[in-house]
Amino acid sequence: MNFSESNVSATSDMTSLSSGLKYISASLYVVIIIMALIGNLLACFAFIVSGIVRMSPTNHFIFSLALSDLLTACFSMPFDLEQLLTNQSWPHGEALCQVWTTTYLITVPTSIWSLLAVSVDRYKGLKDPLNRFRQTPFMTRTRAGLVILSLWIYSGLFALMPVMGWKRLPHSVALESNRCEFNITAEYSLLSSTVNFVLPTLFMCALYWRIYKIASGMAKEEALNPKENSSCVGRNSVRSLKKRIKTTKNILLVACTFFFCWMPHTIFSMVTTVMFMTNCISCLYAIPGELNFILLMLGYLSSALNPYLYALRNKQFRNAFSSVVPCLRRKLVQRYPSSRSSGNRQSSSLLRNQSRQSTATRTTTL
Image 1 (cartoon, one colour):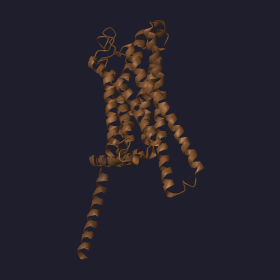
Image 2 (spheres, rainbow, N blue to C red):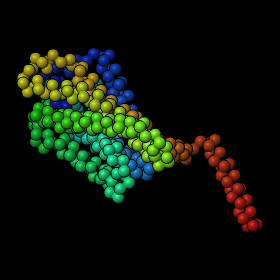
Image 3 (cartoon, helix red, strand yellow):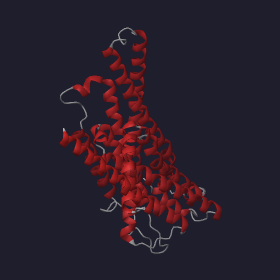
Image 4 (cartoon, rainbow, N blue to C red):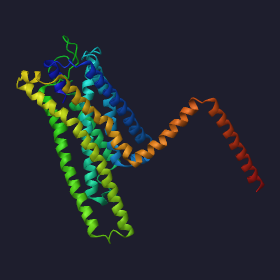
């Protein structure tokens, strides 16, 4: 899926970036990495510590997406930043090179498959509103966990195919240039882009078109039958449907962001792969060296925006954040107390002891 990074850089001068553009790009990389780390760490932490957040099967898929983005920010982006600053020199050896490339090949497909799974869940919830009241609903937390586990196993096996033998070169680190290359074949790159991006994207587009038709039908029905919706049961039903539609809109926003961030780089990768397969070397030389870096950075921007587009817009996640932050503040104060805070705690503890003693006295007297 990142065939362009190896082969375009081998034929075109990808290290000819001007100093100004290089440091601007590096600064943007740092901002994206920091945003992705903070946002996805908060989203994962809120899911782990809050039982209310874990109640919804949808939030399990959001956790999978946040975990994928967190791995991207930890194991993919920093090495891309280093490659930018060191003119693609690789001092870390063969093993770490394979870790970097394999992590990239795992996390990007996992993100889009998680979005597809949560889109199917949203579509089923709107198409059959009474499904969640049944004894065995379509999506439970156990089923969501099994789906997520299957997605990660599939993405891992697909990403390990080059390591297991489907590769172009015997070693990922080129001895002549000392570069870490994405050691994948052109066929693997086209297959990965098609199966792990194009097809899930087309399926999601069809799903959200159906969701739009369902939401439009609900709006028309509500406008034509205002009396039925005036009762208590009707109002609760309408409120529940509107809540599910709002959740679906938030997920649609994440899916559209992922699409517009990664689609340019995917198209670029597929086009350069076809150029390489047809031996159009002059076409590869004509590609600007800056284009691959810019499009890849645009794709990474999705990992930084996802938690802010969904988790921070979701009431359950926001409530979890608001409960987590005071706990962290209290632990920090307890670990690094100041003299003023120590005195305040001593005075407050004395007041509490006095109040407990007076309460005990009143209880004994009664």
